[in-house]
Image (tube, rainbow over all chains, first blue to last red; front, top):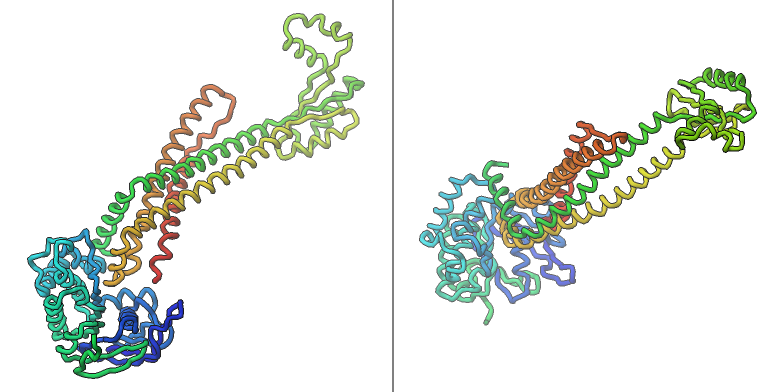
Length: 228
Length: 296
């Protein structure tokens, strides 16, 4: 599903975020990206939803080439990719319902369908009772659920997450991981960059370690592998 | 564009105008001022060239005959000029008639006038030549001036030249002022749009993230610029229309000899032009601030 071929990313300031990375991720996989801060995990994630393009090499998702992709095709790629952030990126002046519905409204889905799909998705992430609340009235875990709901409402084939549990306490983090686990069970490919050692160790999923912009380790049912 | 999207876009346009009301008002006013100047300039120039034309069509060549010419020579000269191509009419004002006319303007004692002037009539015989085409006046005047019995000729070319020169100047000044104000208006609209883009940057970031097309993201801002320009243009059209009408009325009632342009077609063209220019300014302003932020 995802294929990176000889991917390098050098920023204008000369920082070499990724160096000659080759990677294949299959459909329905659950992959952890681990490694020290600044090793290139976030850059790799951003390449996947074409927030950035590599300096060299090719990125392919579902056999679509993201490097050669035209600017006006990018929105249609993104409709098939959900993105989750550490800081949630919710709109503070919109309710939970509006925040999630927003993802459908802006791609032109009709009103009735927006309503029913938003309800169903909020049900799925366990926030049906909070749909009229504003983000500041929610706990961190609840806010992250809203972010997940917004990311999956279009039934994306791929869900990428950049430290989704970074701002959450351990219990809440596990709630979110349960949610992601269930989403993955339904067939969605998940790529998640994280520093959460216990989660990585316990989930026993594929682990790709990135160090100094290179793939240092890639193992099925791996562990976190760093002492922190 | 679905109905659903249009509703969203319209709502966002109104919202963003509410967000910066003062900047919106400033943008509208600058557009308005620049277009009011443009509108009045157009009407002024239309009138100036109309005036130049009507004076041109009344152009006559005053031909002054040599003082020593006899009356039969003057008659012969008159016939000679009348037979030239491009001459419409020739009227003779004899020196006696000229003296009488002069006496009339002084009033009263014309019987003594000749004596008062030392028994010598200072006025020459004058032939007033009208050309069939005002374009020919200059050439015709030169030919007539070259005739041996003719002392000198005088015609209104100097005045028309000056009027045309003046309108040329005015055109440049008007153009400069309108250009300066247009640039200001476009800059203000682009600042306006940019501020709205900035205040909605989170929303835009998420819109791009969930796959909203660039067109969809751009529309509200583009429409906002267009709307600001259109409102400014409409106000300018109203001010210019009503202002010109009342000025024209005043001039027609007070200065009846002045030819005032009252052309319904020109009126409609100017109104339409001002609305269109306003929208163009708005679109340009928006485009300037939108071209950057949607690229990444």
